[in-house]
Image 1 (cartoon, rainbow, N blue to C red):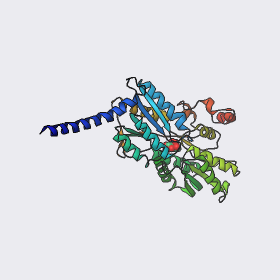
Image 2: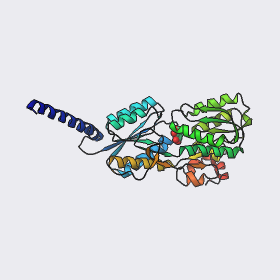
Image 3: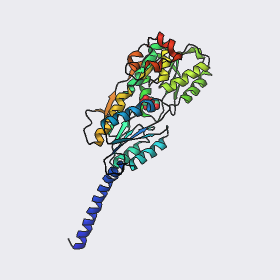
Image 4: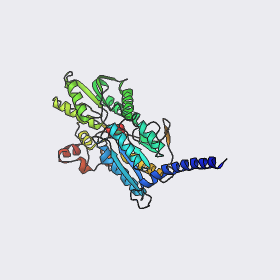
Length: 355
Ligand code: GAL
């Protein structure tokens, strides 16, 4: 090799090496927000929306508390997309640019987020798909979402005696969980004697949309003839119940839900909503924090199961009706009796044995 060639080869090696260092430096430097040469690790938490109460009331604080407990030199960069997939795309991008060491990502739109997963991974930032599945993620954690739908459907069949007309309100078509809830619910409802008069895939899980859809259906159906309503989550159940009430229904037919929102637990205690699905979010949020901290510290994440090719952690959902409020959400400290049994619900609580 002549001198020129050797120099050129050396330069090429140097460039590649600097590139590799640059990629790694980009993470290390900027993840240390303090700029004091310390070793702060940044965990970005991307949540989808705020109308469903779980995200800001449970997921975020539980996740942050567990990270703080497990890791002194970790910080959480919290980003909420307000149900806007483009906004979430930008949030993911800036989290990566700002030096996040791992993304804990609950996508508004599972398909649209696939690009963000690729950008993160090409910047050596692992992605944990949080609650909603994302193709190609490094890890995934959620509840058994198919089972959630089955349990909601089974409860509705049982409460209605499997006879009569129902409305069916599913979740957002961009949310991969919504398809699983819907499939599970259909598997319980379709073989029963229930007749689905109208079915709606609610574009963004919006309670307002749920109310509008139900009101418009009640123009065609006699409200008192409705045997029940499948609502995929509590936000929508609230909208459905408001529409039924506005149409003059006094005695609510069985309405399903999910998320064990405080307002839903109160409605269940008062006999206005039949059931909800309680997903112990603590288990999910704390597992996400443990996995994220293990990743940034280069440690093992523990035993996983396979879900569609991704190393996963899948948890069990729980049905809540008026009979087991005390044994579930209260026993777990998800809500205190005082939170549920406000003055308005005191009689309902007494009747339901919640004290
Ligand atoms: C789902 C989630 C539910 C509920 C819903 C509405 O993906 O699993 O718990 O929050 O979104 O945002």
